[in-house]
Length: 120
Image 1 (cartoon, rainbow, N blue to C red):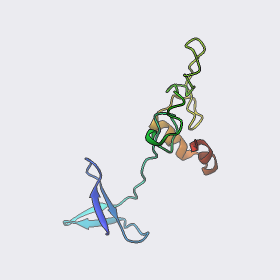
Image 2: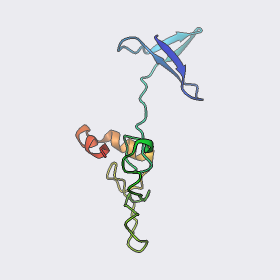
Image 3: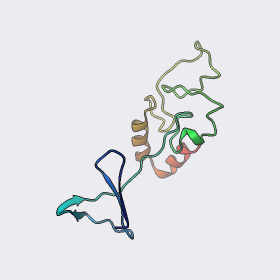
């Protein structure tokens, strides 16, 4: 074990092991704990509604405003022109953009498709 730290207010601990092997479980204070690899969640930008970066570094945040339901650019449309039907441009699903739904769908996509949908 190289380092160990608490992950926020949860009871999970992030432990850094030396090398690439992650043990199935470890003993700590006479108790056995299961080890699982840490897979950080992909960041979601709330400015352009794309997965892969955060709004602080978004290059489009001052140029567009998107509808959270249909991902249409609402800066160029009037209320009469904007016909809102659910669409997620991260996974091309017929649901409104929701971080958990889009991230789950992105994980199921083949890697070649995923690279094209997450690029901005």
